[in-house]
Image 1 (cartoon, helix red, strand yellow):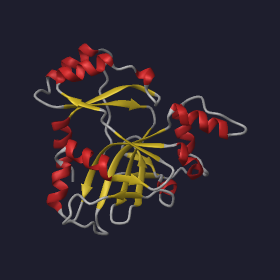
Image 2 (image 1 turned 45 degrees about the horizontal axis):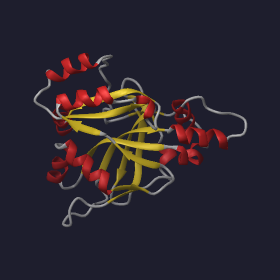
Image 3 (image 1 turned 135 degrees about the vertical axis):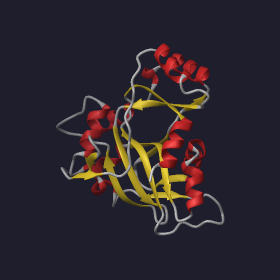
Length: 238
């Protein structure tokens, strides 16, 4: 449970703002661009690698600090399998294909209540503490039914390099493909971000109307990314 692991996929950090004026000022610097907006869910950031050929999880690592995260493969390897329909009829996944999912492992307020009701001698005050308990427990696999995996983005490592590049260089295409074709064969729930995409003005309007207390998840704000910058980074990563 204390095994540390150097991970190859950068999970990133965030610059923080406390007002829409600050956000708007920053977004103006990035125009013209389409912006993706998501809840900043208070959970654990993970990089989960699976082989679409058979759905097997082959790596699962927390973000950690300084590029060193906790190895959580033991938690997912024998309990979680992904299913993914092929991008087109002419391509078939091979055993060498891999997809890295950048996700947030989270517990909803509803599942927090269910989890606490199932426990005899303890309870968790927050969704984040419940996630930490699942991730850090020898019995964590038994508690996966209370977990939601929120997929933020993916990176494709396919034998067909051209097909990989098509998805790695187009954030919206990649996420739409996963949203409609990725499934999970376990009690873990699956959800997808971003929740909104639009222009700078549309994004600011979305932020102004957003109410964090209506969310199913514990969160501490929202995240805005410029899609062309994300695509540039993902496409250029080795």
